[in-house]
Image 1 (tube, rainbow over the protein chains, first blue to last red):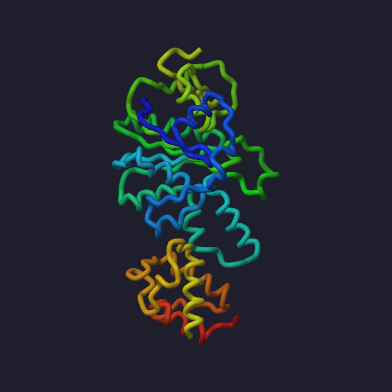
Image 2 (cartoon, rainbow over the protein chains, first blue to last red; image 1 turned 90 degrees about the horizontal axis):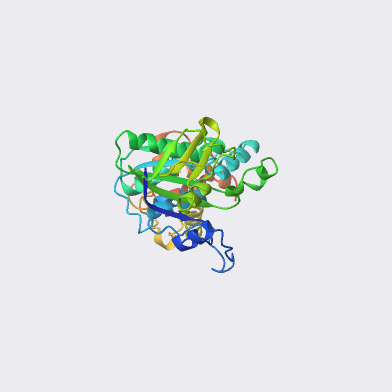
Length: 243
Length: 87
């Protein structure tokens, strides 16, 4: 597959240059841009739809709506390990207090809700896939994209997003760094030879790659191979042999 | 009634996250659903739950009556004035 375009957002890191610096491991002064917005203002999405999106949804809709990423009916794959988990927590708290559940929260608490909002805003009827695969979510999204490209699609929009784990859950879970801040990533993938998904044994025994590992790999021309998942030895190879 | 109408407008904006709408934007007599504010069926359910929490009464499931209650801000305010269990 080829990566034709990409964009990513997290508070304090918005531009491609900032992300390239991050991929090179440069220390970025977090205070450089002043106080970061918790979520983009999202003026591109009609207000009546926008109000339904939570903070993670807004981050994901933002990368989908950036001017450099003009949407033209591409198939979408939405990937998030936990989705808008804070909504689920609010609903659980309402249940615990034996209150009526908020219908709006309930209707938006399904995993494909943000994708649905985008489709409604775009009045699109393209295929939409919503994935969650635990720690292997980054791998599962790429795998799904590769399958759809092999099946003849000319372009895929692969979207990743995570939100910080709610405080009440933090003590109970040991999730990786991606879960400390809101973040959204959009990769536009097309058929091609620049990157190859492979199950050849790579010798790596790393933890599964996160979406941010994936972005760093794409932005690091010297990196030959990224171990995605120990399950099936799935790796992403940059058109030279894995080492 | 004027004060209650203003209160109902603020209640609708807050309950439904209408971030770009101010009370002055809402016509006292315009329909809340479809035209007018452009709210949908999920908003109707959300308002129903919100009314119960805020004013302490439950809307009947009977569709025709509910339609009249939600016909406009004024109709909703009049219904609240007649049925509220909490101030």
